[in-house]
Image (tube, rainbow, N blue to C red):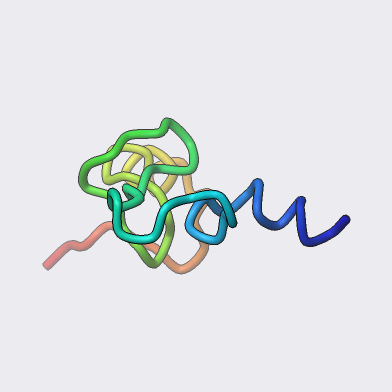
Length: 65
């Protein structure tokens, strides 16, 4: 049962997905935007900026020099 739940969350590991047909697109976990997604955080640049400015991402500060 846990194996089916894992496959539902991660589309890359789905057993019915064809191997080389199309590439699974990396999308933002918050808004679903397909472009400009940071792999480290799994969110797009717009959501990243909003969360960082609100102080919700620990360790991220605005650069100033």
